[in-house]
Length: 363
Image (cartoon, rainbow, N blue to C red; front, top):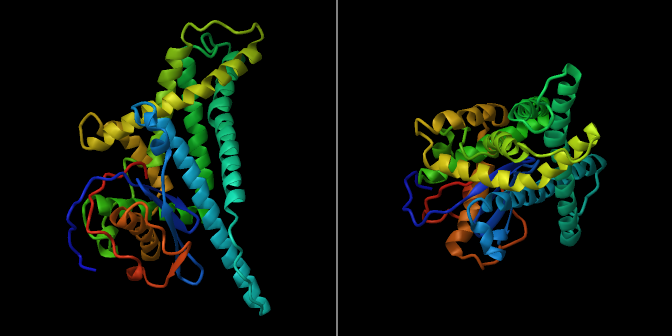
């Protein structure tokens, strides 16, 4: 493929996520997953996509779209992780069968059962995330105030929510540091870096080649890691305003705090909406003297969640991106050629479209 800049067709929003041994990409009309199999092949799955915005147009409104994007991202991420785990399991079963000298037939996917499993996993993940990053910091802040006899640590004051934000950030950083020690997660972080490099390459309007993509940084301002930092700061400000002057709901201290925590649950969606709007604004003006200091913490945090990928990992990210662009070129209603395609050579994957400059959204 020629190493040249492609003609631009239209702006598109494309985002991605690193998964087990691969990368998921999504464009307005396409959802693609690419993973590197144990035999070196790239397994690629793509299909047409219609998100919540297509079904419920009012969710496109500012401050509502952030919550919708968050739910969509979780659904897509869980679905992609499940599929990549199935591919890895097939590789493990094939390796075990080879040792025993027998063959293993691939297991057909059960979409209905899989969809239910993805939905259940999302609900459980939301509950665990709420308990770990909202409930626990709140109770720790209240407990600290009770233990040290600090006034104003009653769940209402800005000081309380600032302390809770520190606890929240500490838990988050500790969690990232802990999982970053795991070899499998380290590989995911390399694929995360590959995802960012491939998106940068397309944003620049360059051909999606290894040579072009290698030179870009792994740090991207629209990364989900940066988004979470923005959410934490937005939550401190929002909770400080909402709970200021709020009366106690019960005379029992610990029960009152639990009720405050429950009130925070529905507030997460407007918080996500506010954080999303800020991230979109920062994406338009990343080099502004006012914006750059605000996005700097998120970029620094990506030094934990992204790593320099190998060429093989970068090929997988580029393959996934190329595939979603293929649908945007040929038409949203066209069916995928096969449910799963296998490629021994990255260059053999469907040629990338004539261009279409992109502004990546979330990565």
